[in-house]
Image 1: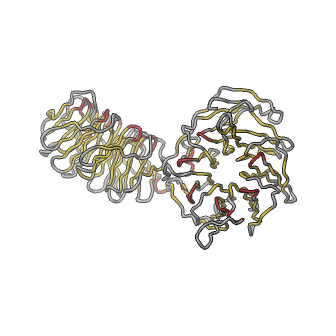
Image 2: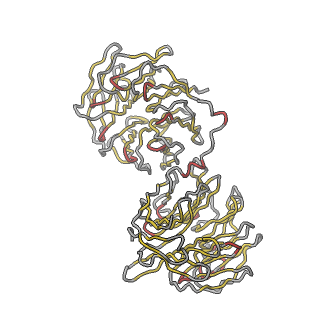
Image 3: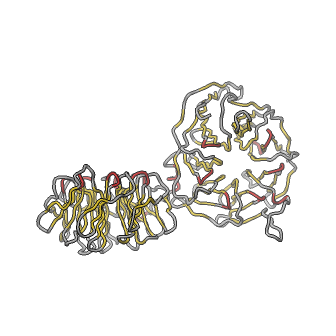
Length: 613
């Protein structure tokens, strides 16, 4: 079922000329940032140039505006199965218990369905017949279909019932060229609505339970669905071609999973189904696409770029192109075109791994390759004596008031104001990547292979961290509340007694963490990953940057993240904005001084400053 591909010749599309192929398409990508849990089920969505709607069980409606996913208010807590509209001020949604919603551009309103009796239950009345699909014409007329042959027609003013001539459950309705409509559903039911408004049952000669259809052009369509096979103890999918006169089952020898949806993207025709099944019809071939999930995929949302989202069980949201949602990113305002960051002369061409502002004295330091340590003195960066021969990744204040520098081979060096001495040696090829200090005698260090070290006043002790992943960044409120982030979305939380996993909902590498409070924490990482913890849950913001984000820091007013290729992003309290830096150097560390000036350090000795004005 997972490895079968078939060939569909476009020249022979209506002649049934098919053959096998062994091609498999590259996979889809998981969309992050939508606050969905494992119990959520998404059924469908709709998109325009301004953003994306995704709907599901319990009246869930999420909207993505190019920056954030927001859950919108819904008048009824029942599953929403399908959406259609001419634009977002004329957008319809249908669902369980006959629910029909209309969006006016700002708010969702209930137009029909979800009738309750005196006990607060849904009675068995025609208005509560479940609806599963909706489509319409450019003039605003719409049709919705559902159980027991239900077909409703919106004539521009009201919803009225139309006689379908069947009691079969209908699951799909599409518009054909010339204003005709095609509805389909259980037991091979296919209905055609002609120009006169009457529905005619067609002889499909296929017993499949059709769930979706796609108009191909002049009075023709592809229908998909599935049938239960006792010998297979499960459903198998069907693809059926209607050429305007007859029906033909395509790929009869292929053992597809049951299909749930079909749509068109710039890459070709996409089919979705059970167990994460995605197939692509393109250039005369049908190929299995790697979805990266085993969850049932139920809906396809076509994006204005020609890409699409796939949605389904367990809060699954996938996209066919990793950068597809960037089309909704708000443009940088005109006032932000000039670089907000200006370069400073560092006096070195060594790669800089860290930059740090001493909270006690306000002094600024940077560190990097070959023991490089810089200090900013009277507006200029000056080099201190090298802290050994190896790379230095982070700095902090020593318990006695000196300076600590940590880095490669697990070495920690101490500077007393004139010279360095070795403060600690792990005697292992493990790099210390981050330091964090609280008070006068509590210091933590983290690094490769899950390394965590702790200084509690007398000596450095290695702690069991509960992970073998590299830990790149540390941040905490105090010695009993600390976070470390690392490979494959790893977030570890220290509670004063032990380290435990703290799932952030992403598998991207995380390179840094910073927060204002325990309910206001930011993480950044691979491919522009940005996450925020509000005290209850993590929310992963869809990437506004293609480049990796390597460092994050902030003030009570804003937050800044920097990363590869000179990328920088600023959160103003409401949303993230990309900022030009005028640099293409990788920015590997960031800090902020007492006056709210941000500093970023990175490749080739690069140091940039962002003035708060």
